[in-house]
Image (cartoon, rainbow, N blue to C red):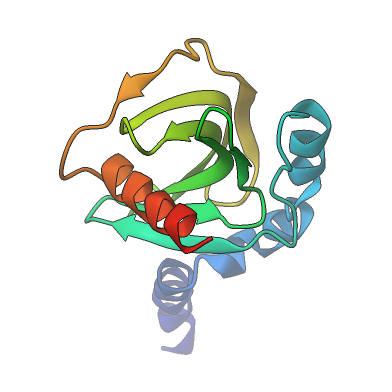
Length: 160
């Protein structure tokens, strides 16, 4: 009888606590990729272990954050350059996905341009990275997380 209960208990435990299965991979992929982000993106301070992420908005699929320590403001142009993080919420099967973007924002015109992009899986392992294929400005649509991020940055700019 005890032998028959072992497998169901094992499967339920792994389903409820997937970190038991992936604990070793999580430790390996903590943050060496943040160093490569710093080395490749010289235009702005890249996020590292001391990044100060502030939640700008969320919906049922994503959470968007910005790093208050990486914000650079150009007084001549009125453009903010900073790192922002988009966390795609997932299920137990799909997991989460995080995208770090080095972006420029013109909060007056409500436009944005992405310069660099780094994508990580739920275990923190880098999936892709590099310069944005199209660094041109694009308008932010109303009632989107991109616009919420822009409004949060406008608030930061007005408070400083």
